[in-house]
Amino acid sequence: MNDLKLVDNCDEIFVDLVEILTEEVNLYGQLSKLLKNKQDAIVIGDVEKLRSCLQDEQPITQDALMLADRRKDCVASLSQIYKMDESELKLKIIINIAPPKYSIKLMNLKYRIKDNLDLITKINRENSYLLNFSIKHVKGLVNIFLMTDEESSKIYDMDGIVSSPEKEYKMLNFQI
Image 1: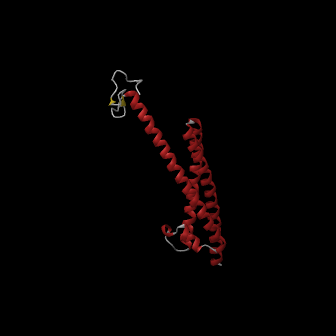
Image 2: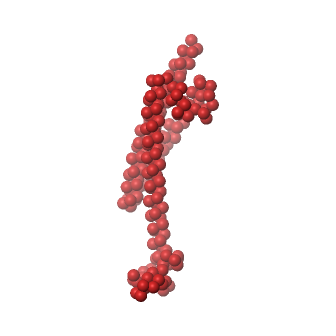
Image 3: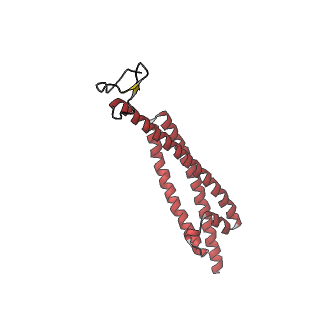
């Protein structure tokens, strides 16, 4: 009787785990679309769209954290049932110990999560590059206008010689 209860409990845990991972796949898909929209906003300089994306991103992040907690609870339960250390129980091992009807679903979800996370990482890296480049560009423009960076304010004069413009023309200099 005890073994049957253990099997039922184990079955429930795998059902929950599949459900949680499916929700995570969907959430990461939403997040990747949102990050792509954020990237488009960065490229075209649409601050309002960027703000909107940031506001939409927060609830998705909160939901992902809640799902992660639920997933950790499932893993903790499985570690007790299978008498394994929780830190050892990675998805790869869970797939191996899962009943066949769940292992196939879990394997599919693993690859979908990995694909989504790889895409999110790529888009975040690209967004970081775009933002850093924009910041560097704006700093360069500010340096030209304020003459705070002597190196960036050097220009070519009419004879093709590099020179620094006069200090009294801090805001605009019409030399090329």
